[in-house]
Amino acid sequence: MRLRKWVALALPLAMAGCGYNSIQTLDEQSTAARSQIEVQLQRRADLIPNLVQTVKGYAAHEEQVFSEVAQARAGLLGAVQSHDPEQMANANAVATGALGRLLAISEAYPQLKADQSFLRLQDELTGTENRIAVARGDYNQAAQQYNTYIRKFPAALTAKVIGSKPKPYFEVTNAANREAPTVDFSKPAPGATGAPPAPPAAPPAKVP
Image (cartoon, rainbow, N blue to C red; front, side, top):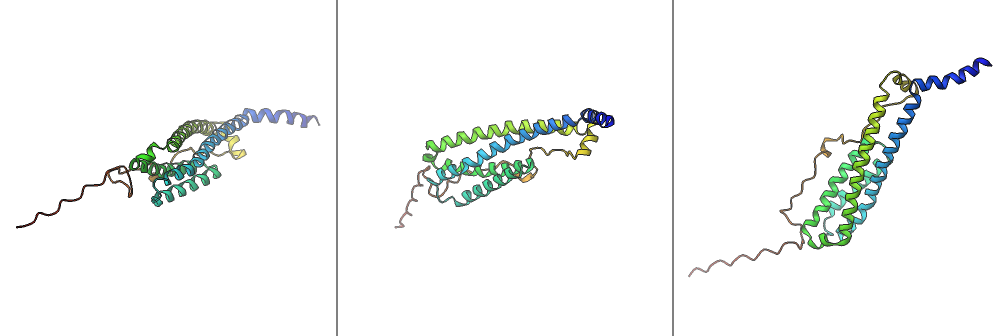
């Protein structure tokens, strides 16, 4: 009976000395930081349908761009549900590219650029992107602290016993998604009202 009592008292002390409590604390911190990324990515996904509808009011024929944005949004929502930071980072990069092409449409439509709903949605998206950047930094820092700690002795032994694995960082791993989208504004979209039509060609001179 006395032996069991000593074991019950000594076991928590031994686990604490091997870093168990610190591993749990760092794990919870990184999980909380990751959840903030998920909140902001969900917010970004929620803004996209309204933005698409606003743009459609001026450029309904841009079906390819709308389709790309819809696919990117679906991928972003799926990545959020996975809770995997790498998947979220890659899906977010794809969404950034698709949104860049969507927003570029406004360059050919002055009335769209002046639309108050469009401007408000742009501001909200920009604010969300800034919060994603902050949350990404917080999470990567928390993940780095956790990953560094579970490699140190004696915490490494405890991490192995309880199955603690290194946490992936929120970073783009698909090289194709690292490149910023390029947009050619020299070619106005069909039906755009931004540029006046070219004057008709002069008739050929009559030969006497």
